[in-house]
Length: 99
Image (cartoon, rainbow, N blue to C red; front, side):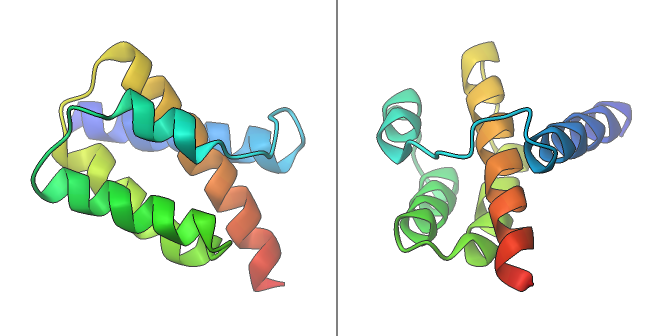
């Protein structure tokens, strides 16, 4: 439970940094796909759903599958950083889409 709260806090902090302009807003889905080549099962489905939504510029629909992937998959350090950064960027773009 404690680790989950830390992850949520870290993802939220990254989202705020992206909103405030501290992070680049370009989302490179090819880089993300490359980092998660070995993923299979439900996590692969979540990744595909999220990245397909990003490719279609439907950022609101991309947030949920990417967050589910973050909680269902054991990530190495590089994957964790890439996924947290991606979620932050997607949340920032989703917030703009809602306006």
